[in-house]
Image (cartoon, rainbow, N blue to C red):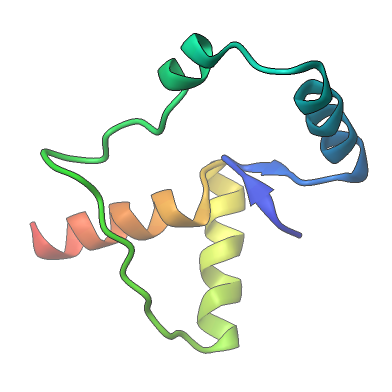
Length: 82
């Protein structure tokens, strides 16, 4: 199941987001809701290929730690290169 910040994307969540979008947004508030910085500079997307077993293990660990897949991978990379 897909998640956003560890929250499962359900039909109910999609409906809530659609209703919010249809009501309109305050542009000033949208600018404040940007992504948090991940480090000292702009973040880059780095595609990495993994097999199904490794991806399942990553997702299971992320769920157990209540973090996103990306957060878990970043933490693992930081620990490895430290």
